[in-house]
Image (tube, rainbow, N blue to C red):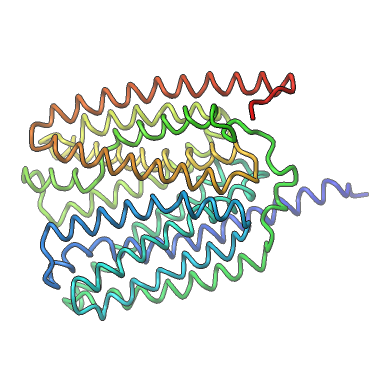
Length: 406
């Protein structure tokens, strides 16, 4: 005779796995579209008459807006609980990418590029909240790790699509139009996912039990750690600039370094996702380590050492985004999760913007200055982690006596 409660748990687990895979597939296709376009938007804007300064301004503004808006969209998701509507609206703005094929001026292309980044800001908090419910029964780290791995597969395939289009046609328009095919796939997968689990919150029956970040005393140290950890994490455009400026490798090989880093991030997302389920937020301590290792290796003049730095950078991406999202899901109640996701994403993006700007300026001074900056910032990140760990112990003790800080 079967156990009804066991059958119910198994059904919930099966639905959760299906939802994670469907959202992972949607992210794979969406990442294919966005990263395919982003791999060539710089030269495309130059082709349309924009200057290098315009390229930098558009890229910087797009990324900043894409992260800063997440605080507002996360708050809306948290209040309205319209997860699917918001997520699908955000993915819908990917339609800006195929339209780049008919952008006759760089100003029009700039509007479309920024619109796609706004779409990212709209969909991310809603999508991550849906995933947080689905990962309850399969493991937070593993669920987010699988999703991140699928997302990164799209990040590798997208640029290859554009390379093939350029090689065959010599122009960008065909590539942008080809990206409309996976965009149609995104819509179909999302509709299937919504019909499969129309109310994702039901997958997390208890509504989330931990409230470590639902109060300001628990959130501040976490936000400080994320800010410092990300402010010391170099971006790949600066690494690729170094590779070209110092003539370390041929230009055509640089995308292969990036692709290799993305492949590493796929594997690392799965491995460290599973590690998160075993040791929890201690996985976050590897972030300062990989940030420091990356900066020590990636700016070498030796091609072998430089690629090792690029691979360390890819590993850091896989760890950061997997453990960050899993730790939020593990440490917040469902009612506040959308808002926390949005706020943390805004902190993440602001830190990356600030850190990238600082390291870009320091590169013109000396690589040694960048190394010193990263070492200091990541040491501060470790101190912030210890602050965060202590605050969580305090919150749990207070929970035990029924005196949780409001």
